[in-house]
Length: 567
Image (cartoon, rainbow, N blue to C red):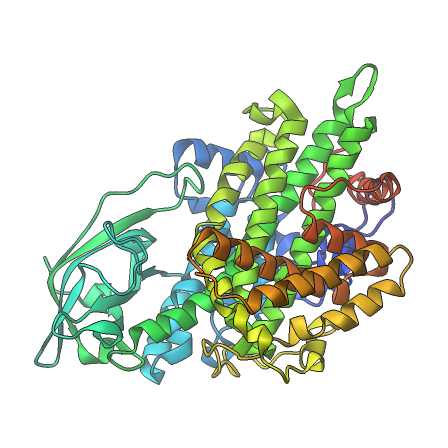
């Protein structure tokens, strides 16, 4: 979510307004020069060869090949330093900036973005609870460009963290590991693996511990790497598993405290679930640009397809969903810094809604593109179909939609508690946000809040909408959504049931609508609120035309950074 510099040749519009998300779409300033620098350094993604071009991404996707050249280019630019907190010698201070950098990469190749950011995601337990020595060793390895892995899931139990075949038996000076983890990113290449294990002599939550395992120090023959697992999306990633065979790890490998592995895992997943959805924004962004470019060149009945009213509406609606997704992702990342006790809610909102909007809208645009969506050449080297497949995986990473919606439904009762201060979230919605350096200030992370100041500000959000032209209808919808959500909070609903899933979705959409109402610019805030609360609804003709013309103005020029071709 970053701005790019330069001018688009055909229109004279600054690319900063084309690229940003926050600046051009959401109203937040492009405060991340590192992301702008990376965008410039990577150059034109339409080139016939070279790292992080569409051609290279598609070649790697067809061959299911690890994106060596792209990752080497990011390493030479200095990307690993942005994955390590500044207190440990890196350049990471703001998760919002990390989100911006990830989006720059994901716009060109979501596979490369997932892999490139995995050392940060895998290291979240280390940043949150590691000893000084563990943090130092892990940070140094990341800065050297080594790969890391977070191993939670197992073949028969999936992400059921309370069971599992991987056991850790206590012995003198440490543990003996026996069993396997499965569907893990980078484990065959990893220097360090953050590993959730179960002590068979204990029961319940206290049986789970997180370990930081140095794969280079494991005794020979004490583990085996399992074959690579092939997937329909993110095909170049190395996803596989590992089996331990009475592998000894010392007591010094424990992250946090023994028996507190579930708590630390949950805190880590909250952080990851806030950031990873933002990578789908990159795929969404490029997919929309590609669709617009194809449709404005395609001729239908002697005129451009983009001149047809239904096509213009679909493009406008997609652009609006992208703006909404950007706003929600930004607000939720800021809430992680500013109100970490609310992060169990805000992370679930981001994890559900942002990939969901990207996936659903790209699938709809595929229908608008017709057969051209399936072409493997021309039209940006056929990258659109890859983007559709890749975005589907973002909704599954670190918690599927049912899991995330159930967690929201389980927390909705907090809305019945009095005393939430709607002003507490104000800094999140302002143009400039200055967080405490990551990971400082996250001590309350994972402690579910009894209060939700975002929903508490719903009345103020409605009042703001009503002061804007055309905002009365959106305000009425938001007030009604708030009333329905409060009624849900007072009901006794099983979060895992179908009704519970529906409650979770209403919570996510109402929360997101408040974020849009309080932070989006006036010319599309009301439309954004309505699109969140009435998904699939048709935009008013005047709104759709206004949004389409804005999109066309931003995308019509030629610039490497704007990801467009010559008109």
